[in-house]
Amino acid sequence: MGLKRVFFLVALSMLFACKQGLKTPDVSKIKVNLQVIRFEQAFFSIDTNHIDEALTKLNNDYPGFTKDYLFNILGTTPDSASKDIRLFHNTYRRLYDSSKQLFANIKPIEQALNKSLQYVKYYYPNYAIPTKLVTFIGPINSYGNIITTDAFGIGLQLYMGNNYSLYNTEMAQILYPSYISRRFDQAYIPINCMKNIIDDMYPNKNLGKPLVEQMVEAGKRQYLLKLFLPNMPDTLTTGYTAKQLAICNSNESNIWHYFIQNNLLYESNPDATKDYMNDGPNTPALGLDVPGLIGQYVGEKIVLKWLDKKGNVSPDILMQTPAKQIFEEAKYRPN
Image (cartoon, rainbow, N blue to C red; front, side, top):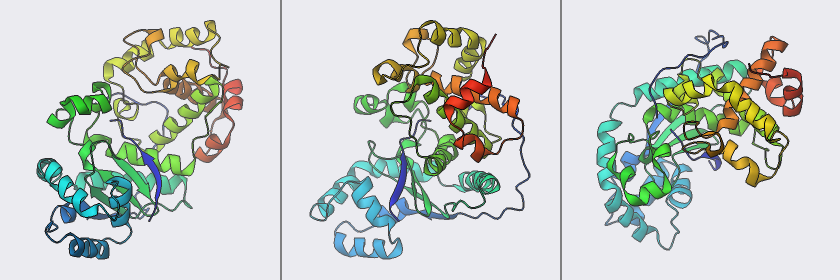
């Protein structure tokens, strides 16, 4: 049950923004039923005075995931497991207690993921979807969302709500500045799970490509994400606030002309492209109000233009079509 893909979550804005041009198919007859496993409850119930016996039982009850959790998430070793587990229990007991209230009813998350997996199976009937939803609590600097060979793994420590006290500590803000931690909300669980599905289907190979191709590749993934989450507000799927999204939409032409005027479209130097393809509080060159990941925003616009010209194109054809070809055929020219 080894880890296949890991996604360091970024996630929170419940404000609504409309999507355009996405048709929602009927998936009601597609059978999906995730098995929910509350691993954190079992882990925080173990007797820390008898670690070896407790871990043996834990591994018997949750084969595969227990080892992934101990060694890949907690980062412990066989020699230090007892000491590390006792320390982790003491350090994260308060967070676990809070999570019991916040995630007492996980049914809405389960239902949302089941629905998204129905869309995955609709578009990709041969893809082996996860069959389990495993919740756990890991260190604050560890994974918030993973996908294994047969399960989604949800690290609740990074979904406690943006006002959770731990996120506002100096240590946590170094790891996750407010533009990231403001999204630490359970509303982002389905989004991050679907991003892991997409990364599993189509490993990212953007390194060293011209900026415009990186943009289009990011836009393709964003479009696919919305196919899997057709009822999710754009303010969640993009990670932008409603204000940030409105600024992007009202300045779409200016943003595009900036890339043209500064000869950035075919720039491949990572130092020159990172500000446009990475998350951040803003895009400095475009102004303090323009959010980070602006390349993804532009890339999705190019993809939508291409799809509008091509008509009925399957998601796999879109994802397999070279980004350069999409850009050239789209003839994206925002007014």
